[in-house]
Length: 70
Image (cartoon, rainbow, N blue to C red; front, side):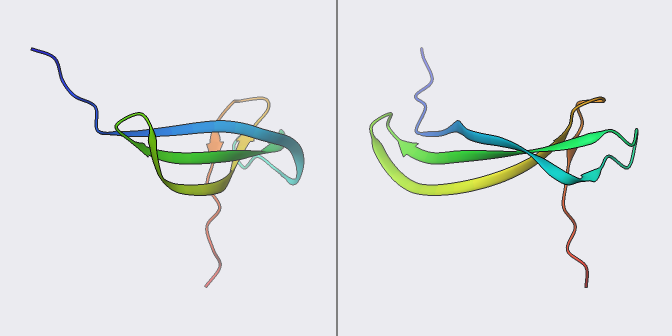
């Protein structure tokens, strides 16, 4: 018996650019990646569309999270 996948998150890289910051772990340069994310139901019906930005270190390959200052 197979499992039916109802929701699918599809991410596509739109662009990459250098961010004006350094990695807090290794002090390496940081790249900002822009993603186009789509949430799809039953492999054909799109529900939502978002543009996301994720930050990665180019030396240690860690995903960096932006914490808002309160």
